Length: 630
Image 1 (cartoon, rainbow, N blue to C red):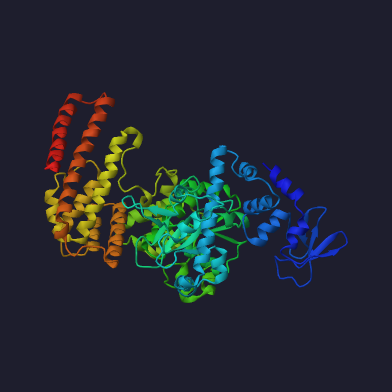
Image 2: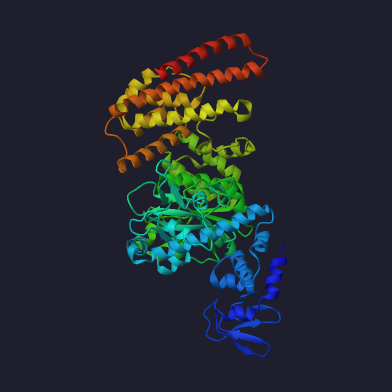
């Protein structure tokens, strides 16, 4: 594996390479220069052609020709290695074998070809951003996002578009005869779209600012495209390919691997991440990754765990309810992996990192980072749960918090946590202590914290058929849509409740939704928040259902803000009616599937009775299909 590295170091003239970037002066057997890695006024860096190393006697920077190119150009080790290998005349095939030893020859050649295509596209995007016709886009980054040209160039930000030509980049890439790119390649890599009917070709990221996504070796594997116009989606991501998978890649992870900081900051979006670098982030102390609007996956966790130098996690998500939920969920994952987890305090009221940069400047971002008052995760959890779940049963909240302390809390901070709980809940300190001791003695038998459980909590998947769980997912989606309509138009709740055949069922989440719809129907002129509070007080819905309804309200507020909602429910009457029928049909089918499973696998039941029940259910399901055709 290391043979290529050794060959590059052995056969490359380190003096010639370093001499391209800094002025060298010979002194004895070695060469000297001003060190480019720290403010240097007296030549303190030595380059030894015999030992093939460089060393700064002032700041301590040292390494070989590959690490020099890596650090000087601020690229990954792999990029520097590839650059030097090409300069030495190594074949692409040999380079591919080094980087992709586990891939078949056919795949490694394809990967190298795709890397080249993405690199070519990226060069075009960068040139277009700085062209006169796209001045508006560059000004958007400079003036509205407060990013400097240095930062824009560092992250290789570009733009896809040239006036009204919708296939400008496509035409430039295809015209590169020496590379021989074709439409099939461009389509696979999400660089173009082709209309199925007209076969018209357009640039996939047309009129979008582009941000290259790189793998841990520093090669471009996809793009994020952001519109600056009023169109949706705001962000567009490259589709998955042999190079890129959403669940396996993190934006900017390659830079984290280069600098190997002990603390990793996690933000939601790439603009927030870039804003941190604009503010003057200390890269030796902090690394930053962005989730690109995606869920943090098990594969993402593996990437971070493999980076053994990371000890601390600093979460900096958006300063809204959705951001707090994301912080709670992802913070718990890192807590379980024994990381030191902290949450940045945002006391300026700004929505995100970039908004702080725009409204308050670079120093405020650095102040937020270095603020000694930043919460450890458990303190943040306590404050958030107590504030956001104020309508809920206080005993449930306290149990959840004390359970978290019992499982993951640091005993050194016990007094701090207890003081915080007492302050926020007004519960007696001794009562808290007694309750905590009882929970601690249970040896953490409760596996999931209340707010992190699945809101439907179905039976274990392995105990039922795939068909059953496919139907269950379909039912959840339909119920979600129905709840949305009821929140939008409370006047339809009574109608919906009366239309639903299934007023009671063994699925807890369905019963809670029916209960919610019934309550809205009986209190149509009351705010949804008060209806939820009423249901919580009567113990008719759980914390998780409250969480679910809150997310629906957030989504509806967004729809209203963007004027995507209809004026009244009459226009949606047919849709609502079909949705109710679909829910009933799915409930029948779920019962049918469950009975079928029991008939085949359970010997302790009356199979004849279940069989007759299924015959009735089958007729009801069939009637739905007949009515649907009519």
